[in-house]
Length: 263
Length: 263
Image (cartoon, rainbow over all chains, first blue to last red; front, top):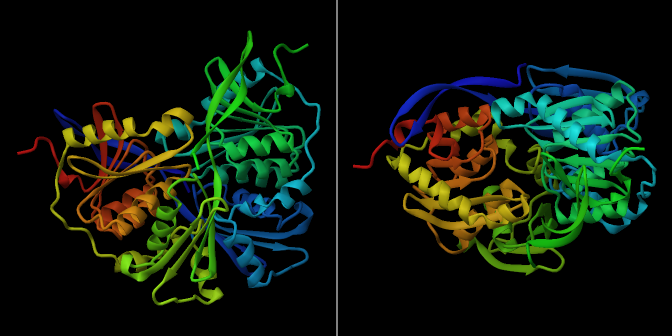
C-alpha cells in the first residue's frame, strides 16, 4: 500500500480560493499478534509493516533475535502481522497488562524506574564522529526524507555509520520509524553496535532507551531533546546531538565523541 | 514544577565550539489512579497535571462531567493524580486491558471500528469562520506558544472562539496538550460546543475523535493532517484546516463553514 494519498482540497487566502491537489500521509492501524495473542494496535504509515512489528517486539524485549522467530505472516490489507516464535511462549494477560498499560504509550516507559536504568551498562565505546560528518549525514538524511517534504506529516529515521545512511524508514510516528529500522536490521542481520541513529523527531527518554539497548552510542536529530532525554543520554553514555541545522549543532551529552577535525 | 530546565551544553560548528546555555523541555511520568486503580502512566510536561488527568479520563469516557468527580489529589512531586468518582466504579482488569491495550497508544484508537464512528452523530452546526479570523487566531496562537519557541520541543493547543484564544496549554505530547484543554474546560465549566481547537501538531484520527466527542466543529493546525484524519473529518462534519502559514491555509474537509468575508 502506498504511504501517501492525494486529496482534492481548497486553498484559501483572504482574497481567493482555489482547488488544489494535496498529498497526505496515510495512517492505518497495525495489530501485532504474537503466538496467537493480540498484543497491541499501533497507528502507523502502511509500509514496512513486517519491520515495524519485529522492531516493536524487539524493542519490548519479546523477540531477542532472528533465530527466535519461526514464522511471520503479514496481512497488508487488514493491517495485521502475526509472529510466531520458536518457543511459542504466551504471556499471562496480567503480564501484558502490566507491560503495556503501565508504560503509558506501550512504548517502554516501564524502564523509567531507577533500577531498570541502572541495570543498563553505560556505553563506553570509543567511536568518534567529526562535526563535518554529522552535518553531512544530516543533509543527506533530510534529502532522503521525501515523504516528509511532500506531506509535512511524517517522521524519518535512519541507521548510519560515519560515512553515510545504511537503512532508512518513514512513519507518521517517530517511535514507529525507529522500530522499523531495528526490525529491518534484525531480520537482515545488519549490525547495530557502534552505529548512529538519526531522526527528524524530538529525542525523548523512550527513544534513548530503545537506542541504548542496541549499543548505539550516537543519536542525531534536527529537533530538540527533552530534559529527561538529556539526563538519560548523559547517564547511559550516549552522545546526544540535537538542533542540527545548517552549519551548526548542539551537543547535549557525552561530547567527548565529537572531534572537530578528523585525524 | 517548571516546564523547562536549563543545561550547559556545547554548540559546535566546523570551525569552533562554544559553551552555551540551552533551555530544554522537561519530561516527567504522570500516573493516573482512578478509584484506587492505577490506569495509565503518561509521559508529559510537568504542569497542569490535574487538567491532564481529568482531560484524559474524560477523553476515555471514564469521567462524564464535573459532578461525577468526588475528589482530586495531585502529588506534583511523585507525578501522581488520584481521582475519585462519586460512583466509585472500578473496572475489571480485563476491561481496562481491552480498553488501553487494543488502543495502541492508550489514546482512543478503539474508536476505529466502523461501528463506533457510525454511532457518532455528524456535526451539523452552522458555525462559520472567515479566512481573516483563522489567520489572526493562528498568529496569536503561535505568539502564545512561548515554550515552543524557547525549547523547540513542545506542542501547544488552545480552545478558541472566532474572536480569540480562551484556554491555552503546552505539552511535550500533542494529545496531552489537547487533553489539558479539555480537563480545564470540564473543571471550570467552560463550554466547548461550537468552539474551535487549534494545535501545533499533526492532525491524526485520534485527535479528531477527541474533538468530535466535544461537539467542536472546527480544527486548525499549522501542520498537516493524515489521510485517515481527512476522511474522518469529512464523515464527522468537522471543518479541517491545516498548513496555516502566513497568509494562506488549506481546508481538507467541510469547507462550507469558511466564509471569505464576514457579512
